[in-house]
Length: 518
Image 1 (tube, rainbow, N blue to C red):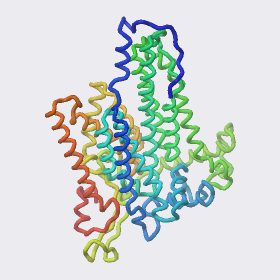
Image 2: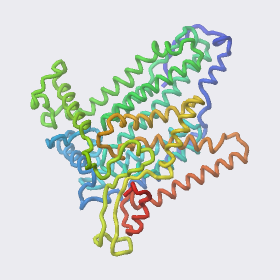
Image 3: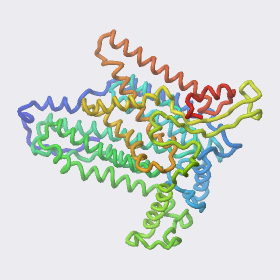
Image 4: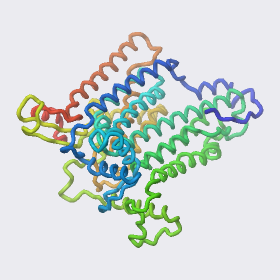
């Protein structure tokens, strides 16, 4: 949406006599590709393929018709919400330990298809499919290449973490969806700000004050706040991205004002952009988060709806009644999470720490059955299992990609890598604060889209510029094609343990490449 900006008197030149057209070009950078219809069809076709794979035999496997792994927590809670009108009422001690939004979304699938694997996994599959679409469009915007956007979509389809999490009645794929959507809004806001400043520079009134012009209402930044509020309504770790993306938008604003030749870009950001950013990213995300508790607020019997009365906690009396109950309930649950430490000498068999997540060194076994009661592998003894594994052809490159991205950020001021690193770091670094806490690899689900975007940027360097020589471009295309084919082949190999197909014990052992995978 175009803002209605004031039109002060026109200046014939920019700062230091530089023509305004030069500033316009610097602000706008490389234009988006003009193949909009082709890009749309590429996006829809790849997303459809990914959606079919996400939905393939979605109701399988189950534990004798019941949920598997941590589905056992969230799927019954979603069913309670469906019965109660949007809230949980299971009073098992601190069993309800996450905000309600993901479970409400799962309840929608259960309402449509019933209390079965298809029902409790349907909306997760839809969320995983939407991530494919978003990453394609984000990658195209970052690289200005429809081809690289398509490559990014294929990589998302072929990532084991995103694939399996899209087939589980758990929370993390929903958070990944809203975080990626917020990231897309931040990037669109960046481009919109630069377009508005370019308009001001072209019309010669960008420099009438040393702080630069006001930029009008920024709908995309507002959208980022909404998406971040929804991400926090899935899990409280969404607040990490609220802080990270808020700082990222401020950095983008300073860079845009500096590029426009504003005399005092930092002060201009403080005077023109900071307060609206705090409103759009900060306040709006909090309000949206609170709105996800609508059913809890409206109820009288939801879990800990009257926590203060039950516990006798008289603190925070200055807050309105229902809000006070929610804050105290939240603080109690956060204390539960922070004190959920790994017992000395008795860790969870599939626990992992955040330094193992970038390369997926300690995956998670979600479901495992073996013996002659399993058939379909061509032998009397079969294995049926699902394991959360990041496709090694991508995840094992995480450290080089992150290192290259950091180098490009520091020494080449490449904002694209900086933005991807911010999204990745917000999902990884906070977990190093309390290493005694129990942690698991599925916490890394929101990292996967940012890893893929980083890989896509690297592939863009390998591909070469569109105007490069025929030999250079052809060689780059060959390298990108070979790598993409390797990822697809790796995904095909992992397919049986991502969807629970019966395999022989020998094939099961062949799937477990590292000792830490066992």
